[in-house]
Length: 70
Image (cartoon, rainbow, N blue to C red; front, side, top):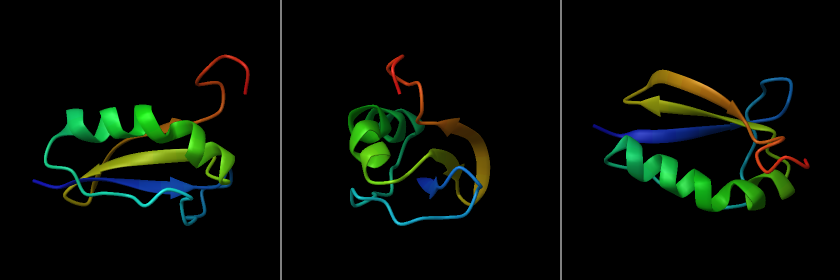
């Protein structure tokens, strides 16, 4: 099983992240990574992310408002 993130602009177009993405073996590892990297991703121009498991979209998530002041 591979868990990956897709990085998107606000309009849904894919964008390159400022932080090198990884492929994860568990959902928890993927979510921990995004929790540690979201600010750098947002500062680098990523507006939202989508989590995928083996190519199947699990959920989207906005990076805006993650800390209450973005």
